[in-house]
Length: 265
Length: 329
Ligand SMILES: Nc1ncnc2c1ncn2[C@@H]1O[C@H](COP(=O)(O)OP(=O)(O)OP(=O)(O)O)[C@@H](O)[C@H]1O
Ligand SMILES: [Mg+2]
Image (cartoon, rainbow over the protein chains, first blue to last red):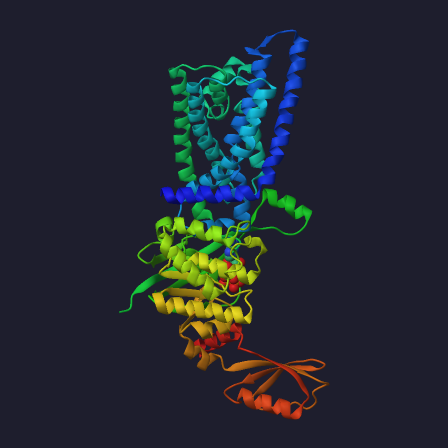
């Protein structure tokens, strides 16, 4: 079992090395995006004359966006796109003749990509961002707590994408659906604005949805020291939603694999 | 002792696709009303295959060969029928089941496209839990027989079709499966490579008792490899028996494609029918029960200025037609 998993991770890593150019591009665009947010908010803060907006000082908000980039990269998943592509071109057919379940296979290949991305993209970015924008590192304990939350967020985000990807068994083309999902998730997860910028009722609902637990809550672990209870609450919600998605994915996969017609071969 | 390793009863499968008429207006219409089209790909198939057999599975395009193989290898769910392969119901315990089989689709590679083939081999080593020493030994042996030592470190996308096919077969056989499905494995291979490929299959079959089910459009493959042939047409099996019988009973014609220097005037030969008359060529069907192919060629060369002769087997469609005819008689 472990060997199968490690092999899948390894092949993902190997093909990530082939596509490395793809990652270097991100290393240029991400700091630029951060810079745009920086100047946008600088002018907003200057214009409003306030030093604290919705509980955020300017420096803290910039940190939020920087950590947001890092979290987004680490939990990144495009498995929905893989499904759309592989069903259309018949690649999925050959992925079903090898002795490993599709979910762990795709998950680990994807993590192979993500590990490569972590080394050549995320960590250098973190380094640059801490230097340029003076971002504070949390204590060792909070870093550990951050990593645990991050790993769970990664699984949760993968599952959301996986579920959307399964839609391709019925719809064939899901490009529109994928884009809608990406935008909605980014918005609800706090990827565009921290959730504390939204009305209280919205924040209350959000606590029960899965989305903030793949970004906003994780970013908060970095930005603010959390009590043990607060941490456990975040982890519990993550595990809860992982469980829910697991049930839905198992159910939908059963239907999808029956529906599959093995195109392209 | 003979042992059934594949047992199929009354297997049925249909595909539902929605049809779209060409044109913009029709595209708009299809948003509201979808026309479904149902293809009955398999219409009640029965077959059983013994351990150690090499069975040729042939039939015209769209007959249902690939569909059958996809069901037998656990990729597709059938609509009806019973299947038992090596004690498994293929689609029910896919992961456990595929550990025991090997599959090659000539149309789609299971090799990682942007990586060298050796990377897929190593992945398969771990996925199929092949011990390191065994892996090394088998890989070396197979690479030698298939003559691909030089290409396994090149990215798969840069390989020629034939090289890719050979590497793909290696990937599918590394774990020494008891049963192998080959779906058009020889497309794209040159004559020499085909010969090597066939020998490789024969050798694997003899040494390890591996069972093969092979689909192909090349009757030479069947003649070299298979003692038994199953013919499928429109989702039904129309023949299941020894190749010898097919050859003696139904492959009783050959097609000659002859090119001449000038116009062949006055061609006449007992047992021959001219199918097509070109300016400098003839397409002739020879009835082997009435005339030996040798005699026809002797006659042609003796009487005309022959530039080139191409001999083809009886087309599969004609074999099927004859089988139907015989059934109706
Ligand atoms: N994924 C699919 N969706 C819809 N129809 C399909 C699909 N796959 C096959 N069919 C139809 O089912 C029938 C059998 O196809 P199949 O691929 O099994 O034929 P085949 O015997 O392998 O033919 P070939 O020699 O051309 O490979 C054909 O009529 C084909 O159009
Ligand atoms: Mg086919």
